[in-house]
Image 1 (cartoon, rainbow, N blue to C red):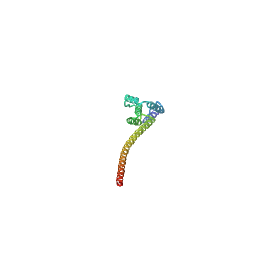
Image 2 (tube, rainbow, N blue to C red):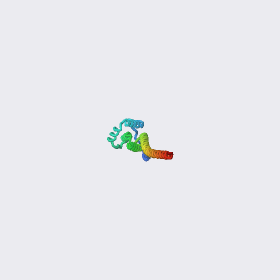
Image 3 (cartoon, rainbow, N blue to C red):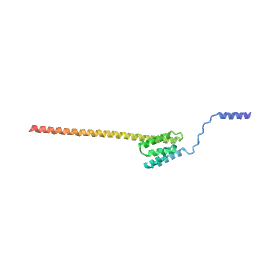
Image 4 (cartoon, rainbow, N blue to C red):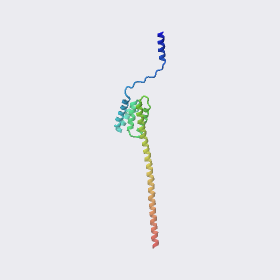
Length: 168
C-alpha cells in the first residue's frame, strides 16, 4: 500500500508543469554595463580615421558586444550617416531579449541620443536653408532700395534743373 501511495504521489508530481529555469547570470548586471561603458569611453577617444578603419575591419557584427562597439564607432564619425547607423544598431540592441534590462536601457538611451543628434542636424540644415533664402531676399531688397535711391536722386536733380531754368 505504501508503495502504491508513493507511486501515486510521484506520478502526481510529474504532472505539475515546471517553470523554465533561467540560467544564472555569470556576472553582475552592473559589471556588464560598466564593461559597455568602458568600451564607450575607449571608442570616444578614437579619431574619426581610427573609427573608420575599425568599422571597415569589423563589418556589420551580429553578436551583442560587437554590435554595441559598431554602433559606438558609427556614432564617433560625427556625420548624419554615422548617427543614423548608430541609432539603428542601438535600436536593434535595445530590443534584444538576450541582453540584460540595463543593457537594453543603455542601448535605448544611446538610440535616443543619436536620434536627437539627427534631429538637431536636420534642424540646423533647415535653419541654414532659411537663412540662405532670407539672405537672398535681403540682397534683392537692398538692390531695389539702391535703385529707388538713384531714381529719387535723378528726380531731385531734374527738379533742381527745372527750378534753375525757371529762374533764368
